[in-house]
Length: 452
Image (cartoon, rainbow, N blue to C red):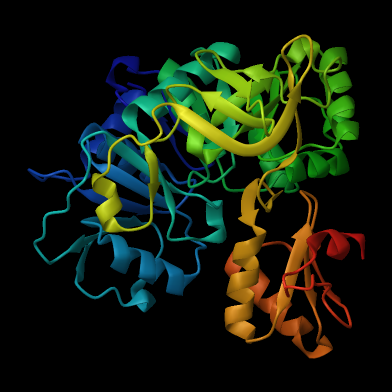
């Protein structure tokens, strides 16, 4: 398994600006976490790109416990609700969360331990719980098994041709499935991970990339907008060989631009598609065919299979990396595999004569912003509950649009969206209409709304 790292010995494992750990040293750090229990327990990791969180993650998986990864920027009220709902045995946090007033927990160093002695019924194959909406926050989690994670790590390592010489920059959050998959796939082959929380727009980020001779760089669509803005193509980066993109549809112009850059500079650019429910990778466009197929999501990853529903054209994925199912409460952690390796993606697609798939729309109302999948209906429900006034949401993978009928609500909506979803102001707009368009039955007419 990818988390059994001992045999990679003196190979460099995790590198930050402050520290460098070999695989032996990373294992020693993991051994410092005493997750000892005769029963399978739930452990919450509240942090992102820190060595201690990586070590705790490895320790938890090696002890065969279940891990819930949460962003440290999560809304504190929601965090308290999640902990109250799922009752983890241990909470590992790199930040002081005393103000949360987590009743029933006692702190020992960076670990909070539940005082109440209770036995949680957790399925023996449950390994990781990830929020269905990244850092946006929800009680609903994707249940991933050890096999799910292992299968995806192996597939990614295979099609990206990863080996021990890789030095992957990782600045995507570990609580986000794309970020976690980078860690898993590189641990799988004994490669080095350059861990940072810095943005690609920071000069110090590029100093780190150059000093540590990063060989690969991942990003969501917003990352590639920023990479163009900061002038990646003019930088002297002889060690950087691979660029990867996932987390939403990348504008065709940027696919073309970075595809040509990679072709002309002896680099590889992979456009990929996935969902947290698939741990998360589903498909990729082989780099040598990217400029020929710039609008597609490519072909299934090794070991996976894609097909279309004959009636609806919904994209269906089959593979060992498909989740066990969802969890919305502690009781759900006892459930086994309800998906049986089949994932209905909710995306409508078509396939060409070469077997390359293209997403043409969504079955349900979701948008992906900065790599985070956001349910528009959920946004509406939350805002209406907070404001006690009707709102309507529309948009695309570039921008969320919130519509209200009152100018007086604009500032409040902006504040709530930023607090709840941690979105940059450029990722959403609030518009005022005299009347939200509706059908005769009172339901919102989203087609007319989008036209307006």
